[in-house]
Length: 104
Image (cartoon, rainbow, N blue to C red):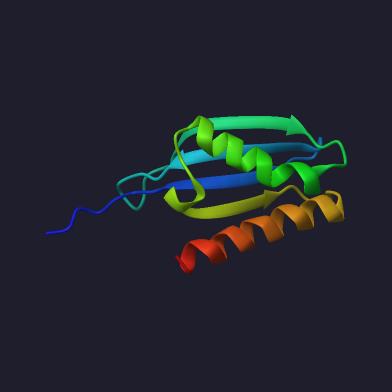
């Protein structure tokens, strides 16, 4: 019998104050349980997210002894009314990482 592993979830979010947050969550073993935040990093978007986001994700995961390959999925959460370009970069990054996870 194969043991089921619960890989972590990376959440990239942008709030109404232009704060970008990376969260690493451990899924609950039960389907109805709440995922537990195991690490979090925040920074203020200074109009350079396109240069910083991938490096920040990589450094965040490394600091938490993880890699993109260890993830179950990546989610993007954008507060309403946010900067179009910043929101788009976050959404595309999440979609691209999810595509890479499915094809590995």
